[in-house]
Length: 618
Image (cartoon, rainbow, N blue to C red; front, side, top):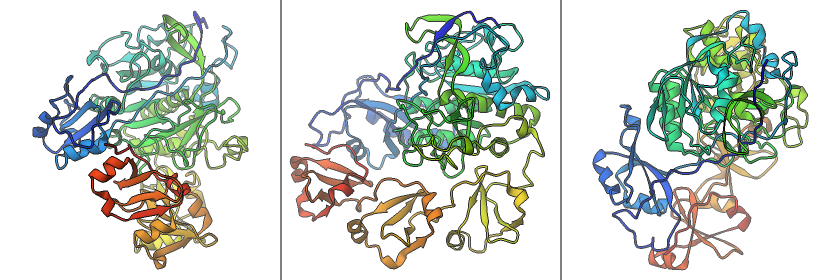
């Protein structure tokens, strides 16, 4: 194997908003007199007739999803404004379906790794990930099919790279320049997308470089990130929808990270693509972190935002010994699988140190970004073997065929055992081709009871999720439950317990703390908020610890909307709007006539744990 260039990867990029500069809107609430930073917003109007309200922006506003006719993507615009979100919502009240400040989205950081490598092709460290996953064994059965189209939503792809010449490149799109990408051209001015493409489809048996997971495959380059790896949620969303509308069957998303918020348009785009049958795979995240975080405590989007349908296969990283590297995130609720992601050799076309173009180069890299294409490659081989397989069947096959790595990770998750926190385990490609494609006829949402036991599970997202008697009586009274044997469902890894309905109050028998279930997560409720919202202790349900502990805990439940809040010691006064506490200055407080309302005093430590929004100032 000939390696022409030797580079060390150190790509740490962060997404920022686009460069549309705007002025204030035609409406100008009196309280917005203090300058605020320019931010980017996205709005879905109820009618296109409302769009001219944005005409006051110097650089105008942009219609998004112009080529898509689906109702959920009509009348969506992005714009920038030195405004507060509450100000915009007030000015446009009654005209929009949703209005959000755009969340930041970023590619996964690729961490510094080995400074060099040899040209000895017999050294299994060259591509240990292929061997660990079982790809060479699978190639004796199937090597791929060019009818499988993978959209790499990233920085673009250098299709001129010497080791990507066997790849069939289909028409893509550059959402930065708003131009079509056609033929074998270089659309990658950063290098990250080319790194991903090499793992997926590098040319085998050509006496140079590396081999990809698929010998025959089609790649759709969809550039949604600029040369520094920056972009925004609206552009990523457009890219996903465009790929779904233009023939992609798989989407590689090496994006996500701690601190990203739920984004309505991104969530809708994921749902749209999944509904069209696409297999979507995303990284668990490792950006800006020297040590991985628990996704249960700090969710990453979009992989944790799946509406309990597991629309995205969330991927973490392991090394050659199946040990979770320190950088990889983990968690029971969001992570589905792990794959090779440390010291991975792949194609590159930019020197990340000098930023200069470096054609036909190779480098070692680490990160959950690198783990994603190993899973996408497995999905593409399954589709090549089973062309009629659905995205749900492929997802479930990948998850249920994995090898557990819990015993190799006894202290790698925050200093404690990773048992149950690394999904179903490390991918096992040949094992996913064993047996029938559907698992004994189970379908999504089935309730099953293990014979001669009281154990009831719901088959959901490729996992078996325990159903307690409490949840069974509350959510599924009279529902059909199938009797099964342990052997019939042993291939499904165990997921978190099924949650009761949103709005359910719960507690442990051993503790007085009360929680409210909201969107499948539990929110602690302080005594003062419990009373203020009019809850009754007779409505609080006691649950067992394993069930309680499997649900993600989020921020404290805030007081009812419109409540004025202040701590016992702190001087800051908050106004509760849409479930978020907004600090106010005295002038705003007086101007809005809020002094007529009573103030709810809360412990300062409880206020610290409630969601905060932008300040309301005058």
